[in-house]
Length: 309
Image 1 (cartoon, one colour):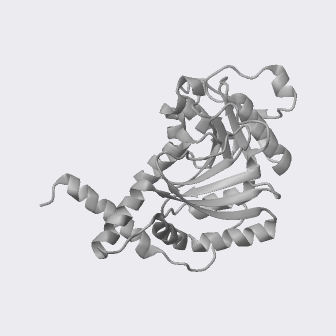
Image 2 (cartoon, helix red, strand yellow; image 1 turned 120 degrees about the horizontal axis):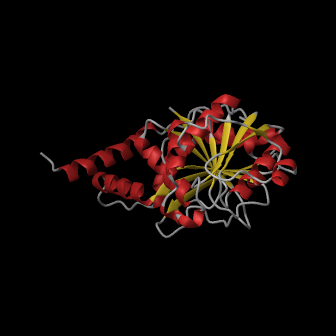
Image 3 (cartoon, one colour; image 1 turned 90 degrees about the vertical axis):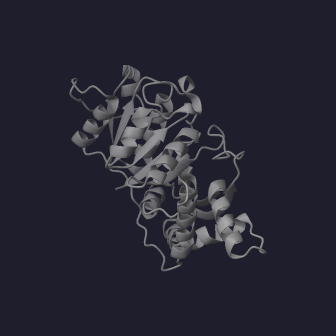
C-alpha cells in the first residue's frame, strides 16, 4: 500500500488531470451585470476607513446604490465625515452581540444589503499584522455571508476609483466564476477595463509536468501547455465577457500568466494604479477557501469575494 505522502501526490495528480479532461470550449456564458442596490459599509476606526469610505462613495455616485453604515469594533466617524461627502444610513445592532463579524452579518440582514464593504484586517491597522494575516473577521465573513464582500486591504488604496480596472483571477476550475464575472461586469466603469487573468500556479504546473512526463517521457512541456488547458476550460466565460464588453462598453482583455514564486500576486501599486480584484469562492471547496484567504492577505488592492455554497 502506498504511504500517505504518495497517496497525497497521487490525489493531486488526479485532480490536475481532471481539469484537463473537463476542459470544453462549449457555448459562451450568458452574463448579466450584477450591481448592488444596498451596500453595508462597516467601519472600525482603523487607517483603512478612509479608503473604505472613498470607494463606497464612488460606487454610490456612479451606481446610485443606497449606503448603510455600521460603526463596529472601533470609534465611529466624526460628525463632519457623516454629514459631508459621506452619506449613509446608520444601522443599529444589538449591543449584546459580542463579535464584530456577528454584528456585521446581523446589520447586513437587517438592512437587506446585497454587498458588504469592510477593512481587512478588521479592527486593527494593516501595519499591525502586515501580510501575516487577513484577520478572523475576514475569514468568518467570507465563510458565512450570503452576499459578496469587498475587503479593503491597504489604507493608501484611495483616490481614483478602483473599479476603473477590475481583474477576475482564476487558477483552476471554479463553479463560482460566472457569478464573480457578473459582479465584475456590473462594477467595472463603462469606460473602464475588465481583465480575465488565468494564472497558472507553479505547484499546478509541476503536477501537470509530472503527468505529461509519465505519458510522454521524451516530450518537453512548458507553462504554455497548462495555460492552454486552462484557457479551454474558460473559453465559454471568455466569450461571454467579450460579448458583455461589446454590449456595455468597457474594454476587455484575457491574460494568461505563469506565477513564479518571486512574482507579486498583483504587479500594480494601489496608489498609482488602483484595481479591484474579483474572486469566486466555492465555500464547499477547501482549496477554493484557502486560495481566497491567501489572495486577500497578499493583494494590495481591494478584493471582491463572490461566494457560492
